[in-house]
Image (cartoon, rainbow, N blue to C red; front, side, top):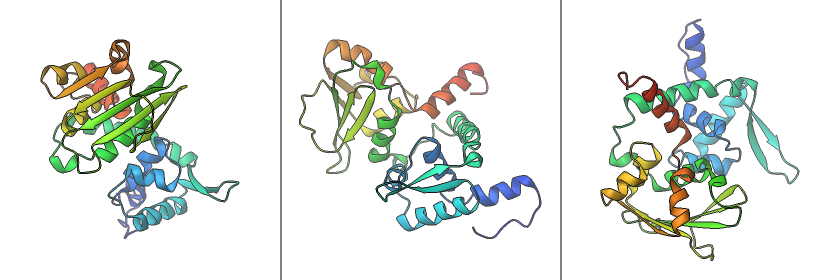
Length: 235
């Protein structure tokens, strides 16, 4: 870790562990269920591999993370009891950010890869039939090579593909990156984005009806919206 604060205050000691650049976002990824190094990288695409390794080592030394080796020789990272106790802190920080600064998104905050990775792990696949459902998402303003994505929901699981998986597409969503990001962050609804012409949904009528229940928003954003509903004046 970097230079400490030189204070005995428990908050200062916690900040020495958690407040270095990227650390709290790494804890966010771990509390969201990411375990393997490459999965952590997908959730933190602008974090260099060397820095990610260094932060994982620091959290291990602090007793927050425990590296584990699997039978095939690969490694994953599990939160210790101390790490799991950070989940309410991550959630409360996210709620605060959603209520007070979350609407101030700049163009540089938009990341199509991070958005699709977060959607993949945050959707509710149980809202679709048990049989395979394929949702293609097409962005009209994504960088070259990142315009088309496929989500395959089947038997309560969802997979993310950057290349056509070769299955018939059941739903096609055409959107700008900003519009779908706003929907995922609960700053807009699918219906509202469609009315404004920012987003189109094509495909099976029944699946289109179920889509808002499946694409229900980031879990952390939903917590933020719930806090605003509970206290609309403060929101």
